[in-house]
Length: 304
Image 1 (tube, rainbow, N blue to C red):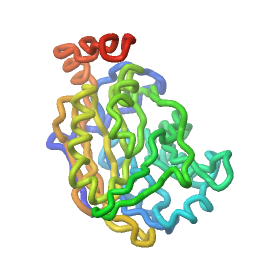
Image 2 (cartoon, helix red, strand yellow):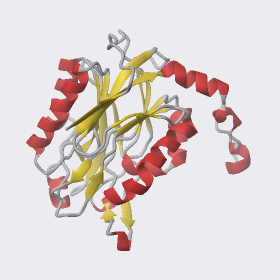
Image 3 (spheres, one colour):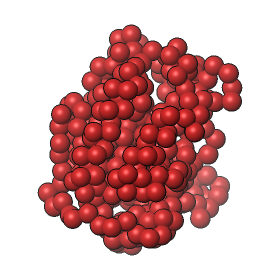
Image 4 (tube, rainbow, N blue to C red):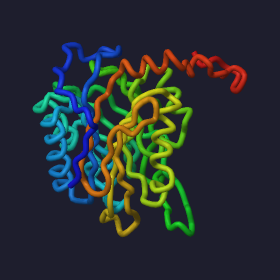
């Protein structure tokens, strides 16, 4: 199990009294949790819980887990095990956020959809009281066939896509929510940033094949383009999903200049880094990219 941190780990700050402020609130410590989830829900919970507790012990005010935190196994079981928002998985993580007094991002779990035999790939943000602060359902579904590379998936066969981007306003700052394959759509993150996001969450389960080539490049690009912190927890290793995949790992936290502040290598573990929202404001002020974007010329409308 791997543990990593940034060079200057600050003392944990008390969570602000207001849980809905969207302005810069100084600096705080964030953690990304890297998991090797399987089809064993209880084992996945124990693995995630232990790492979240360790992250909180080390001072993290915001802890994020990867996509498919509670289950990564055969597709037929995925739908069968899907739960509503008031189900046991969400309740477990809500209780944990409340007991640790942290913001906790459940990267994603399989939420029961209204359509029979389908589910949502859903990310849930809890505040330090254990209340649900925001819910995001994955918009862009991973339907690919890379042929000779051996990567074939059709997420849309079992997953119902979401319908709207979500930016959660918290005492720590505004958090733009996304999941995995969303990362490849740069304009999606521009929307999140224009809606106030200063931190972008990208819980993921990139495959070993696509991750090796694209993962870090895309994470750093989204940070640079949007001048925002990117918090990217990931799955790692092989999963018991009938041998369909191995996940890349390399969970990381990247600053708005594109610098990797902390990362996890292979295997389950966690990494921590300081998030300084004043740095976001300073970079955006010194290089006002958003104000220079010529949307009317390119797309026929203004960005703001």
